[in-house]
Image 1 (cartoon, rainbow, N blue to C red):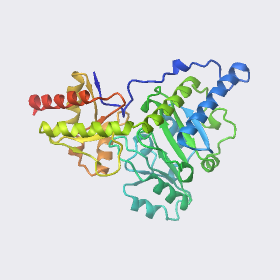
Image 2 (image 1 turned 180 degrees about the vertical axis):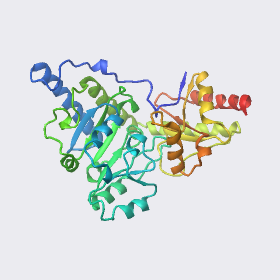
Image 3 (image 1 turned 60 degrees about the vertical axis):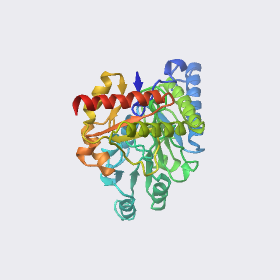
Image 4 (image 1 turned 180 degrees about the horizontal axis):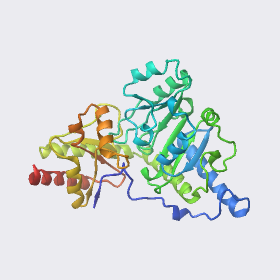
Length: 357
């Protein structure tokens, strides 16, 4: 098997909830409940350490999409603005849409709405492009706006700023993107944004934002997975991915396969790559490779409400046409990815072209 779809879900999962099983409800006042609550709070602190923050609150819950839904239930949708690059879970809430920073610079200074919330991701989940989040966040701070940053595709692939508290108000991640269990994510919220959201000071039921019993075991596993991912970045995982991307390009050129790597000329993580292959239908190629146990994605998020729409929207924001978007695949690397995996992928593309083009 060749797995090149780590941006959808990292593989293999290294940290399972079952390995950190903690009985007891953290909302209970007896000893088992108190022990579970202590484990949950330790997980929160571990996450804060990974993010390099000393203030604010860490909330744990379901997937990043579910966390966003809980968050947006507290916010007037008319004050939310999103970039055209956003994942569908945030994009669907935006009343105002932006593509370029100069549009944001104009909008942020408008008198209405008086309160503004800006959503702009750190790392694009389709292309791996990295955006100037500190510049965006400080622009928001200067204008009195709040800044929500989707960091789902960033953890383990690109350093989170050491200065996060100075420009960001909300950061969202999802554990299964960096080796943790599926179905659990976390959200860091600044003190000033917590006040705006009217969160309680008590961590009970995630400061009043997410009701019900939290999955403590999954939260603990997630915190260790994040710690491992951050340490792996320091140990050179991004350089490993850079080397793999260079090898992929060499093999594509050597086999005379036309291609273009989207957003290659701007800052990006080398772990996530959108590969435009002229005249090759992305969905057909993905299905063919899957039949050979080679796993990649079309050039769109695997969890969009409408894959085709998101593919066109995000890739068009990067300058592609709808037709070009339909001919783009996403190839994403992990710690376990090898040059042999790249060899198998390229040979699969070569065989597909011989059979169908």
